[in-house]
Length: 262
Ligand SMILES: NC(=O)c1ccc[n+]([C@@H]2O[C@H](COP(=O)([O-])OP(=O)(O)OC[C@H]3O[C@@H](n4cnc5c(N)ncnc54)[C@H](OP(=O)(O)O)[C@@H]3O)[C@@H](O)[C@H]2O)c1
Image (tube, rainbow, N blue to C red; front, side, top):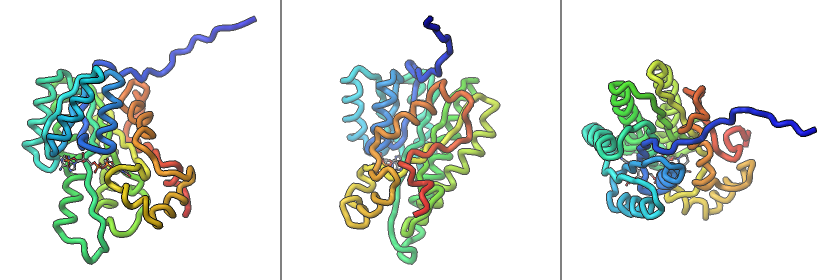
């Protein structure tokens, strides 16, 4: 005798939601914008290079998506305020923020300048905080729930040389995720971090062609560098009703690199 089991499966449906992705002019952010659009969300794409955003917006619209390019510098508060207002005015009810904009400076410690430090920390940490604060302030005023997904890094918990500001900023971002989760839970705004391992983008492509890059790949338990699509499942989980009871978490997507002892 066959039996049918009735069970409510989790919903990954984000169609009709409005998402804002920072750092969407290249790499991971560009891919995230395409994934969210393919899942039916209206997507605002933000970064400083307006020409790259216009190109991506054309590609998303050609594929049937709805996309708004917004020139925005996450280190500049007025630019953030204007971006959030523009998204709400042009795309409607903003409810998902992907805090993805990031930069890295790789130099030996004694060559690292204060300017290098400020550039990296202001973009990766202060910029993400200002963006999250403006987004949350906007949603709370409108009594609307939402999602904040901070793009952290394997380097929030592991360390390597030459990138002190980047490691400190990403560790700060993971910790900030917890604080924001606690403060915003009462408003129905869930805040989580996605911590990628090494993902092939403009950030690092040249390095992975070198001997040290190849030896690093060999130390990843799954024996390959990640690709942006490897992150899409975790992104959709954190953006969708499937993660309704998840806040303050950091989800690692790193081929096992974060737990490897070598
Ligand atoms: N690739 C990896 O292996 C890896 C691993 C872990 C975490 N991550 C994180 O993933 C995120 C994306 O990295 P990626 O590899 O895709 O690098 P990427 O291709 O260099 O992209 C970085 C993005 O950030 C934007 N950006 C930089 N400064 C900005 C600012 N002040 N205001 C607005 N946008 C700004 C850039 O756009 P404009 O220059 O046009 O402004 C660009 O779109 C970063 O947060 C990075 O730390 C990457």
